[in-house]
Image (cartoon, rainbow, N blue to C red; front, side, top):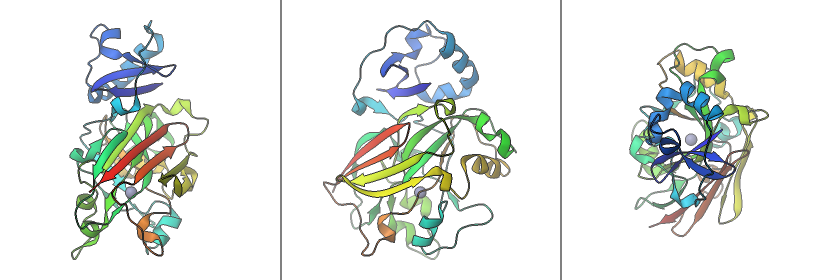
Length: 280
Ligand code: ZN
C-alpha cells in the first residue's frame, strides 16, 4: 500500500492515481495525513477491503510530506561505515549519535530550498522509517511490525552551524526550513522483497554523488527501533532518518557544497524520488 499527502489531504495511491481517503471512507478517516498513524491498524484493514473509486492523476509538485507533523523525529548519524570514516569518526558500537530535525524543516518531495547565507550546505540521502504503533522496549525481531512504512528522506545539512562551537549542533544545522524533505509517498514494508536491502542514491545536476544499500547500515532499521525504543517510546507517526552512506560534500577532497541553481535528486529503490532545487 502507498499513501500520500496530496495538497494537504490524505490519499491512497491506486495504480498511480490518488483516491481521497476522507471522501472514499465517507468521513471514517480524516483528511489530515498525520492523523492516520494514530489509527494505522484500522486504516490498513479498511484500505485492503474498501470499494474504492478510480483515483485522480496528480503532479509530484502537489505532494506534501506523507508525515507532515511527527511529534518526534529521530535522526541517526554515522550509521554507514564508509560515511563514518569519510567524516573522520570511528564507527559507533553502542547506540549511534541521535539528533532531531525540528518539525518546521519537514517538506514535501518537490521543493525549492533557500541556501543559508554564508553556509556550507550538504546532501545526505537517507531511508526514512515511519512508526505505525507505539513502540516501547520492542525487540529487534518484532520491530518491523511497528513500522507503518518507508519513504525517501534527504537530511540536508548546513555544516558551518552544525560544526561550530565547543560541541556540534547537529539538530540546528540540519533544521533550516525545507531541510527535511520526505516522500514522495509512504510505502508499506510488505511491498518490498527485502525491506532491509534497498539501494539509495542521490545526484546533483545529473551527476551521481552517493550510492549505497541499506544492508550496509551499521544499525539496521529493526536494530534502531530496538535501541531507540529501549530508551524512549516511539509514537505513531514518528519519523526516523536512518543515516547516510558515503559521498557527502564534507567528506570530499576538495569539499563540495550545494550552490544556487543546483538540482538535487534523491532516490530509494522501490519508493521513488525527491527533487530539490536550491536558491540563494
Ligand atoms: Zn543524516
